[in-house]
Image (cartoon, rainbow, N blue to C red; front, side):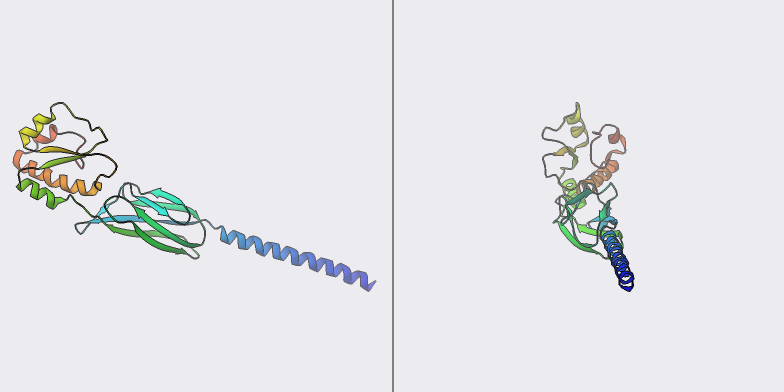
Amino acid sequence: MCAIIESTYMKQSLVFLVLFFLIIRLIAQDSVKANYQINGNVKKILELVAFPSSETVIRINNSNKITETDSLGYFHFDNLSKGHYLIQIIGNGFQPKDTMINIIDKSINNLELVIVLNCKISRQVADLDIKKGKPKLLFFGGLAPVAYYGQSKFEKKYNVEYSCYGGCMPPPKECAIEYNKRIFEYLDEKFGSSWRNEVRKDIIGL
């Protein structure tokens, strides 16, 4: 009789241990699959001033996740587990920037990443073009940019040249905006605001 009771007790203990380890394993798996996040903001530094980023690719290299920043530079990744992540910023006009992030027990929020733009066109270049009497108004176009009727008349009237950037490697938009802003100031000083009613509507930053 004692042997039967002891056998029953052993079986119950074994079942309890199996259930216990199953529960522990499920809890461990749940912690590994936790839904962590990384989000933040990318700022581009141009002439020591921070500008919002646009259309900059953010990639987590070791998980093959890719996203783009919005018009203000914000980005977001979700469904991440604990571990190390190499975040890469990819875009025109600067060297790719890599940042290593480690998720331990909580999400990474409001991460700020800063890159420095390498501008071949800038406000200073615009000043030089004005001094040389060759100011330009920049716009982005495709392989076959559109020419508007009367644009040559505008160029002669205001002594400014339309300049199109096409192809796959245009300068950073922020650089072109800074150049054009200086040209806008120059045209306003010389001609008032009348030129704004006649200019092409696809000029960057207008």
